Length: 426
Image 1 (cartoon, rainbow, N blue to C red):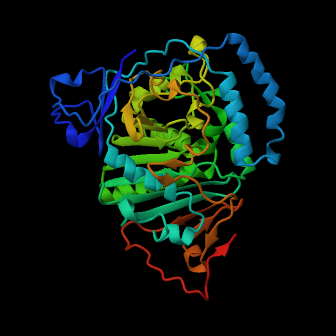
Image 2 (cartoon, one colour; image 1 turned 45 degrees about the horizontal axis):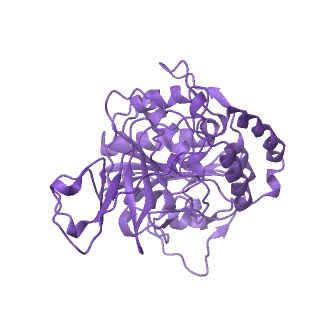
Image 3 (tube, rainbow, N blue to C red; image 1 turned 90 degrees about the vertical axis):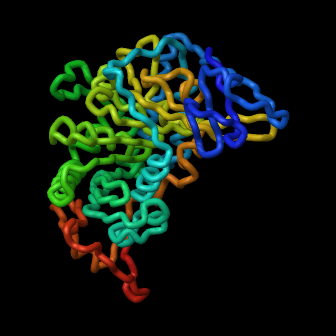
């Protein structure tokens, strides 16, 4: 078990630390005495990691106890269901050795600044006022994402799914964001809870299996075609620039399938994926193949967030159950007496680093709903608000699903919404 050390940055004259944050340096398996100036004001104390709990394989049989309750999910709101999920997670914690995935020696490099930008896109996509989202004037559409130009907003009414594609000129990249689960969306919860795996059937992935509901949400709805078409139009104008895909919770799972789809089926070369509070979405074979095809992927997890622990991981049966892919960045707290700091640990290449989020019991709902101080939730229903003038930019299919779209070469739609013409909920 490797100790880790944390120090206030101003007191640490370190030329080459492993992990440098805005106000904290975290050193893993490193003796700081060789480059630290002595300071009586700080006590340097190593902190060990919590030992993993263990449970016998027979705990798997407890899963059958919860199956009947999934058919009564319509009686539960988000908080009540997550409490059930916590109980399931507690019952299925077990120790074991993580798999060594094939990732050709390349692991994504974590960029803290980029994470704080992309988390704002993952938060903004939750907004239900499509007028403000389309014109990028919403309450979450400023700060680090100011100036973003939306190209398409895709809204799947039937499955309560939402995403957008746009151009971030400061990043010189196309940004794609997917909304996570709506609190009271029955369809979303059914997809989240449908934990059956299915064969992926991608070239070169003979053993890969993935979560049925998450796969369906991206591939078998209007979302995929809307996103792919928007990306093609954007690339015609801006060229072969970077594509950054992001999302929170279920939106993170959809972002993963989108990034993989763009690489495998649409020959996109410069694809980066960064997710927040993403659940497991496939088995170890999928995790291995994915990490080779989309190596520039970061999964950010927040302290005791429950969702990254689901569906459950069984190290003793790692090849047969769900398995995260690399690379995880775990945000967590460490303390020195009354001083408490948040640090970010860049985890190993296994996808299931036992010293990162797996070292704690995932039981927190609040940790799932906030990342980097940004709110990661939205309306409790699938209703949307839209000004009639913005509706003129939409195309609609027979099932009521629609896409708000503008020509990327045209100027950004600017619209002053008058009180006499309020956005209308539909």
